[in-house]
Length: 362
Length: 146
Image (cartoon, rainbow over all chains, first blue to last red; front, top):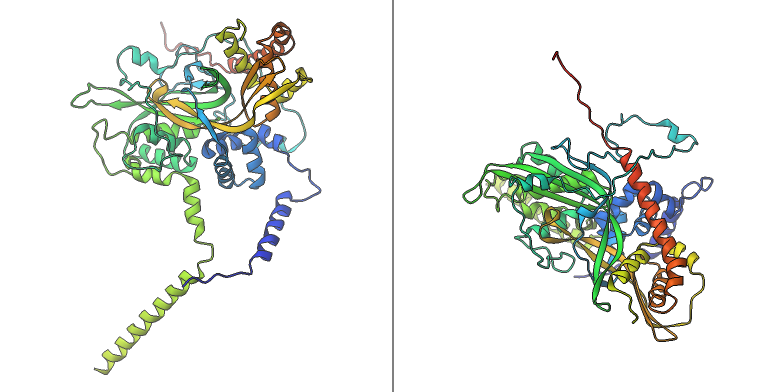
């Protein structure tokens, strides 16, 4: 039986009005505007864009304001907004070798061409709270020195040139798109990378960490990590050629992993790959470790039953919007469902009690 | 269409797509009469990456894009695809595209495109110079006796 209940409307309206009031907070304190969030909470904006899978810093900043800083709620808002927009097409694959870099490091080659560029990093800070930020005062401008005019080559290209890296499968096949087709197993590497790129940072991080602790170990080194902006180019049918339609900030991580060889391949280094929208190196490194762990089958490695080797487990649980949607629905009214559970328990108790009484009597 | 080369058109359409909407508005306060062929429409483009930077493509995520098409009084058609959701940005970019195919091209190049190019180059150079200042200069410590 389906029983509709009414009566929540007034309460819901009042709850939402209070939500707006709480969002504003103490009215004697200046209200945050969206541009302030975009400019001063840039890494939160980046995370919302990456997991919302939509590059638009203004929208991500608005979502953060609306969600009161609940980033998963903000990602939810972005995903919902995205579904209202028409898709004009697909870009040409971005060329990360033509990245205008603000950061580029390698853990494998000290003297790589182009050098090690630290960029605006938290690395090497002492992680001490900076109380100066609680006081007024301008941050000093960044230092500058002469910049190289050429793009820096990818560092793994060096190993590639020596034939020590696994060969990449180069093709221009149209990749599967999980925003169009539901995720199905087995998932090919392009589909896995799409799912990981928009996956929850915490989940992907924990999966990557589990491989480091021994659950499907892959011995990863960060061959190169680079952050910067890349042009996005798209074929425009009305023009008959491609034009740049904008540029986006990206974080790319390439790992170098030990590989002892297989029946068909000599010992060499293999790759894990991470590419994430915005400045998000924790996510990009995590993504490349998980990508590599998921490749056990194609590389003929042993499945040790580690969670990070299980594509179905990783890919079906990395999306925080699917996860939170299913998790949080259990708090919504389930009165009728629960009523039947209650009936069932009462019946089972009655039967158990009757059986006891009968046993005692015998 | 005039003798405008595809390379030239590609180049300035990229500049217009990346331009800051307010800046373009300031450089082009007045617009010539025009007629819509396609009113500004906000949508997305799926951005692709390549596995291992140079391998097979995969879908990374989308970006917002606004597009439109219009016709000037003399029949010249202008197209725009610009980053973000600013309809006025797309309108002005399409007008520039159309005007660049008319005898006004030199004036537009000087008055609109050259400043946009210069400002973009300056912004990129500033980021690159700040990055260069954080480049590690390794030096080797001499150990033991020689």
